Image (cartoon, rainbow, N blue to C red; front, side, top):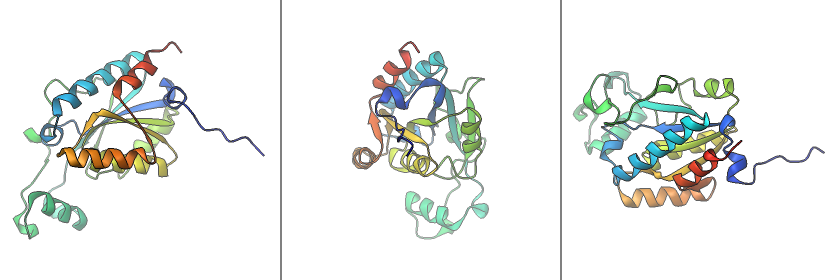
Length: 209
């Protein structure tokens, strides 16, 4: 029987040439409304710099919603809950292309060699070419950052495992809209994936290969 081959340390799991940094929804209308957004921005900026220096692929998600009449029912119900309305006719368009809220946070912009994937669902694997881009580069692991931890970050980490990828969550580079949501999601993530400070990821990527 072939020996089981599983990375046992963070160093083994996030080897630069086999890892991608996912920058989740660092946009004004989403990350811009998170609790502790300045902490998230500082940690994310350190990770981007470390990734670029180590040759780690950086992938930015850009959340753009379709017009309401082209939005599927489950997402409409999600928006109704977020906007606290009792009927879809009362919904206001949100995160539309070209709006201020859809722009990246001030001081944050993808570099020319980064990958930007537009999406409208809370998993970057849904209706995007993410899986193809990862396979083209031989990626095996994802380091996840951004907002919101309890929505897209957690969805994508779970989906990554279902697709055969390891995931690592950089805790201080993620944020939610309440401290309670952040704590609840991080606790759940710890039970089935790897959660570490951004500094630990930067330390690994700074090591000579």
